[in-house]
Length: 333
Image 1 (cartoon, helix red, strand yellow):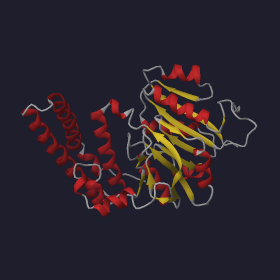
Image 2 (cartoon, rainbow, N blue to C red; image 1 turned 180 degrees about the horizontal axis):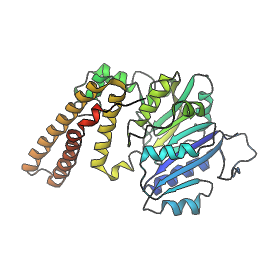
Image 3 (tube, helix red, strand yellow; image 1 turned 180 degrees about the vertical axis):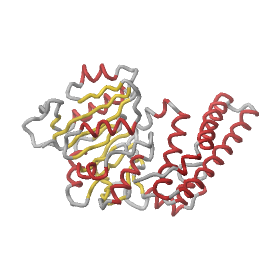
Image 4 (tube, rainbow, N blue to C red; image 1 turned 90 degrees about the horizontal axis):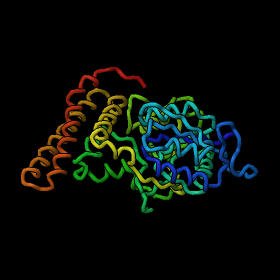
């Protein structure tokens, strides 16, 4: 039985993807190619893993690198940028394993990470999705475990208002009241690395492709929880996540996708009025930042940076103001 199907979406991150694939090859795994042949450790009792890379029309020779250096990878070449969510769903549809894993291309796994994640996942029949302890590039802790946000949290989290948020609220949301190295249920984990039972995927489906990027993993974990599964943070299984390597290429679009995904989540699970309130607060946040950045530009402080930020933030404001009709569209989940 094939234990794990790992799905990774690649877009112009060739060097990071190579590190990710090298870390998999170096781990104690039985790697399985597209024909089903075991190409590493065939006689050892290690987890069997197939690696699926969906390349979103990269322009940096990613495809050529995979074909030349990683023949065990199942490669799906797209002629267009299919986006993060749609790309993951393409990979999930290809998966043959008894578990499926979403793994960012700018990650590196530790040798025993997958074995430990599998061990925890199957230690309880109610465990549906597990996620590892994520580290930054320098080895420091990266916050990825979360509780589901309520509307009040949504008004503060990841906005310029967050420093003014009540501390207990953010402690609850970011689960900083729990050990980084512990193993315990959480509401959801960020999607740099998530391992799920195939039954979960078959029951709730893939990622909601109405998200472009961001919040899709929160939505996925929310749907799993609503159908009775428990999501678990595994603090003693570790990966490195270098973070934001694809999104850094498109700053303004990243802001737009992040905020619209946040709105979509709240519209879907908290209703139209919650999403409308959040839209207004977000628009005011960005308008105020435009005012501040414009003032700094006028006094001559780092003018290229200020002009760049004003342009980016204005794109977000326009997207928030012009997309209001989406809030009244019925959405099912």
